[in-house]
Length: 116
Image (cartoon, rainbow, N blue to C red; front, top):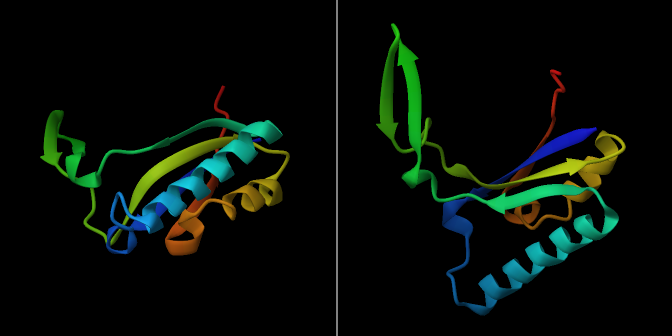
């Protein structure tokens, strides 16, 4: 079963780039990603550009409306994602707990529904 992991972080809690704390955080991400890849469950994983750079699309009365920025102003933002192929939810949750975002933000785990 495929699962989408949404890596959510509070932008206030991230260490500043170039600091030892940031280096440790990135090393922890690399370790988690490498472990998932080695176990054969990682299908895809990537950070996302800042939510402030997003464009939100809405269609109302057949007209496309564009808004600069995220769809909702919230403190926590999705900072990245991973797609895993796991035996079950428990396995996906185990891997999610190894991602550093779970320690200073959260990791939302959702099953990907096969619509084919």
